[in-house]
Image 1 (cartoon, helix red, strand yellow):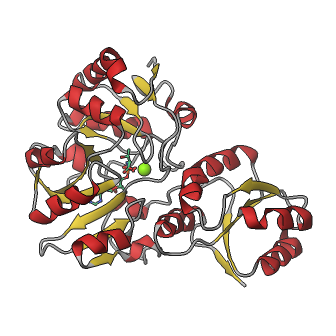
Image 2: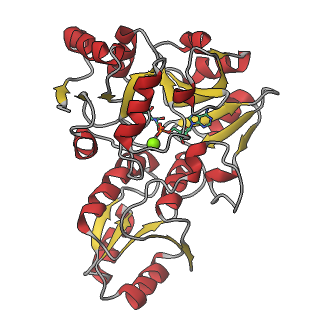
Amino acid sequence: MTTKILKIDKTVDKYEAELKYAAEIIKNGGLVVFPTETVYGLGADGTNPEAAKRIYEAKGRPSDNPLIIHIADPSDAEKYTFTTPLYYKLAKHFMPGPLTVILKAQQSIPNETRANLSTVAVRCPANPIARMLIKYAGVPIAAPSANLSGSPSPTNAEHVIDDMMGRVNMIIDGGDSDFGLESTIVKIEDDDSVTLLRPGKITAEELKAVCGKVTVSSAVTEALKEGEIALSPGMKYRHYAPKSPVFLLDGALNNCIEYIKSIFGDKNIAILAYTSDFREIKEKLPHAYLYEFGDKENEELQAHTLFNILRDADKRDFDAIFAPLPRREGIGLALYNRMIRAAAYQIIRM
Ligand code: TXA
Ligand code: MG
């Protein structure tokens, strides 16, 4: 398949003709990668079962892992799901934006899109390119992250081209993703309680301020136990897995440096280093390849660069990669959730 690349910016009015052309591809059952404020999405008509199947093929994704449908306006959820007052409360505070809500599905969304579940995930992205594309398509756009299954989500067009060239009809290059980690996912339960399934830019604390109580699924921070059923099918896969083993370090910098020196002193290693630690690590572990991970307090910047670093590290074939263990609050929880998976739950405590 030949893949067209369309480079545009967020002043979408200038690109009406181009976006209408991309929307035609979607309407005709084709695949279009588009930017969102979280990560790039691999989009197709969410009401077309054949188009949904093409998404799974292009990603190499297991067909039991359901897709998020992207809508242009929060009230479009009426057409595809059974909304509740709580949905509108969440929508009022967080949409358009990086929040995905799981609701009971209507029949208008085929089984192929929702992997035979009775629910479907909806999200109204804030990125103007994404919203215009959905609007012109006139259908909900089903879109997982636009990476090959098992690689980190793409946060710029280069990542998408690496994974999707020749597999999709079009890639819309809209520049760097603003946030860089996937959306926060919540499920509205039958009794109107809220479960957090995947943390993101919209934090657990912000959700609690709006909903009162929010239960954080244990799968956010822990590996599924043997035989346990995932609330969100995607949680059972080893996501974001770099080729080299990743270790999360929890302890004073000095101890971490000593540990690395004693065991990996002669190995080809990489370290994600906070700005405040950078010089000391460079001095004491001169053989290590250092990635700038930003200020310790600047979790937005860490979120923005994490997948970029992991993709770069994949090309360099390290014996091991070390990163500091994030805190479990605010955006730190989203970092923790992605990094603990990249590390296959290996934390070294000192
Ligand atoms: O930021 C994002 O959410 C991006 C952009 C493109 O919108 N999309 C994204 O999609 O991250 P994906 O497919 O890579 O991750 C969606 C996750 C998967 O783990 C999937 O299992 C879960 O959401 N999911 C989708 N529908 C669900 C449902 N009905 N019930 C439970 N989990 C669901
Ligand atoms: Mg994904």
